[in-house]
Length: 174
Image 1: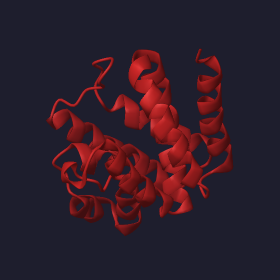
Image 2: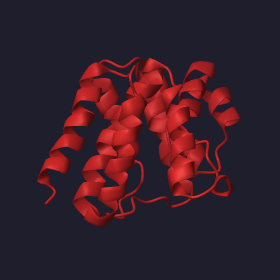
Image 3: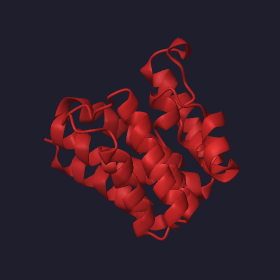
C-alpha cells in the first residue's frame, strides 16, 4: 500500500498547497481533510487505490490538476475513482438545487469503492460543517440525506455511520 498511497498524499499536499488552499472554517492547510478521508477509508480496509483516491478526491475539483494528470501519475483505477468523486455540475447548470441533483445522480452511478470514499468524505465534512456553520448545516444535512438515499453500494459500516450523523443532527435540532 505504501508507495502508491505515499505518492498520492505527497501529490495532493503539493496540489492543494500550490494554490494555498485552506479549510474554510479553520484556515488549516486543506490537506487535513483528504488525510482524514483517507484515514477513514484505510480504517475499513480500503484497497491502496481507494486510499490514494481519497487523498486525491478534491484535487481535480479544486486545483489546476486535471484528471488526465491523475491517470498518468496513478493509473486508470485511481483516476476512475477520482472522476467518480469529482462534482460534474457547473455554475451554468442552474441554481444550487439543480447542481446538487446533477452531482447526486453522478454519485449514484459510482462504484461501491467510489461510494465508500464519498461516504468517508461526507462523514468528515459533516463534523466540520455542523461544528463551525450551523446555519449552512441545515442545507448541507438536507443535501446529505438526499445523497445518502442513492449511496446504496458503499461500505455498509460507513453508510450506517453517515446515517447516524444525519439522525443525531436531526434529533438535536429544536
